[in-house]
Amino acid sequence: MSRTAIVYRSPHHGNTKKLLDAIVNAHPDVTLIHAGENDFSPDMFDVIGFASGVYLSAFGRPVTELAERLEGLAGKDCFLLYTSGSNPEKYGRAFTRKLEGRGARVVGKFGCYGYDTYGPFKLVGGVRKGHPNGAEIEAAVGFCRELMERK
Image 1 (cartoon, rainbow, N blue to C red):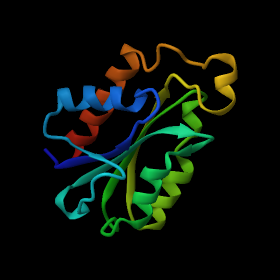
Image 2: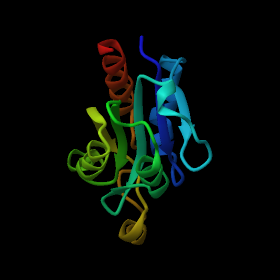
Image 3: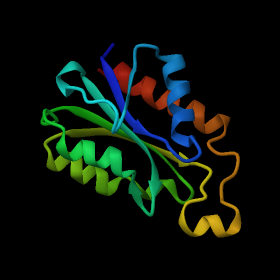
Image 4: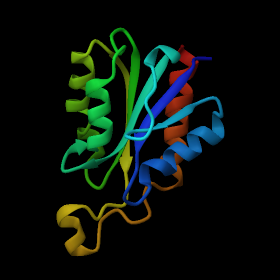
């Protein structure tokens, strides 16, 4: 079993944190690191996840900024986990390029819908109410289980 950390930020509706709580419940050895509040050394972990909601097509700024300044990502296995109010399949490409540019290996991505009232969605009362739902949460747990079993 690999030593796994997930750097995250989930400030608005807690969509991403719902996924992470379920992951940690199923895998108590996973370490959660709140971006912007905790610094850590990637050397302490075999695999590092980056988790965030998607805001105007990008990962949250605290997670992005930490990934940009974090030393020791070269050669490290990383994965992405994110929630979005629209089309989660398309997000993660820019963040993947950012990590790969730092020498990290992105070994997986998981995105699902999340309740979203950011930007223009606020005008209509939000979109994707009820997400992430139980099936999406279970899929996120399964995604992490598969990643950890590969190591």
